[in-house]
Picture 1 (cartoon, rainbow, N blue to C red):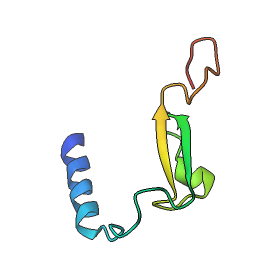
Picture 2: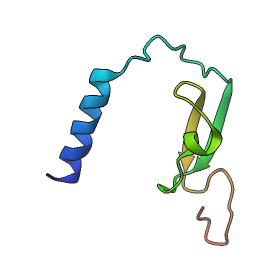
Picture 3: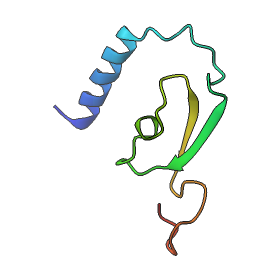
Length: 72
């Protein structure tokens, strides 16, 4: 199975079991997190967030340049 097929199947399972549709669209904790796009970082886990707690925006530089190259 290719990566795309695997991801699409996982998304289908998620959609079928999703039970959080009653959450308000504004985040429950009234925050937005601007973080690095680095796939090794799980912002929700790192910050103790649950689904619906915050808007999470991932960028290549996490909102600021942390090295001369501009990478996270």
